[in-house]
Image 1: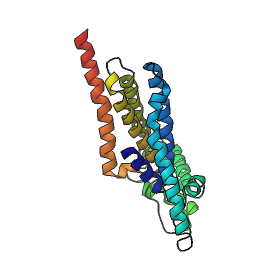
Image 2: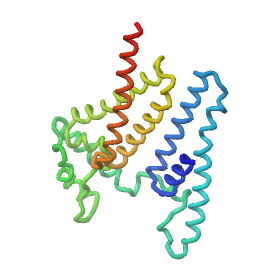
Image 3: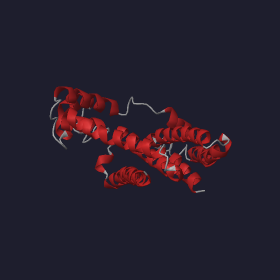
Length: 239
């Protein structure tokens, strides 16, 4: 019931980035279900039953958004789009993100060593902003933490930032496929989903500016690191 309500909440939020995240989550979940059915030699339908809450939540949310959109179509036209309308509008064109991404890449090419300095994208974007928007509004963020880190800290900075995700993913692989972690595999699977979710958010928005998201990110990294160290210690004791 909790998972059904969670899926419904995500879809009813009518946020396109959450739709992308949910689609990737479901894809990862299907892959893990297939891996688990092969590893544990059980029929895949027993594992795939975990997808039922996601499907039920999707169906309920689809009809809920359809009903609300129809109800308010005359008085609030365009303010509450249906699920199919929001999905069909998922594109980089028109959102402005693509222009800022290209601007940050161009700035990184011109300032490979040190970048603009941490927190100085709002200054570095000024020459580009004149071409993106004919207004006095400045974008404080690139809407992509990876590119923003690169533009502000240079090539070395973005490589170090990316290495945090790569190393965390490597720890997940070692933990999930470790011999001594059968009972905790699904815990690490959900930790992986959280990491993927943060990666998607960091690719489309700026979660580095949100402390609560950083706390969750630190929690995900600590789960993988802690269990990896525990497994390594257990392996030494059993030798």
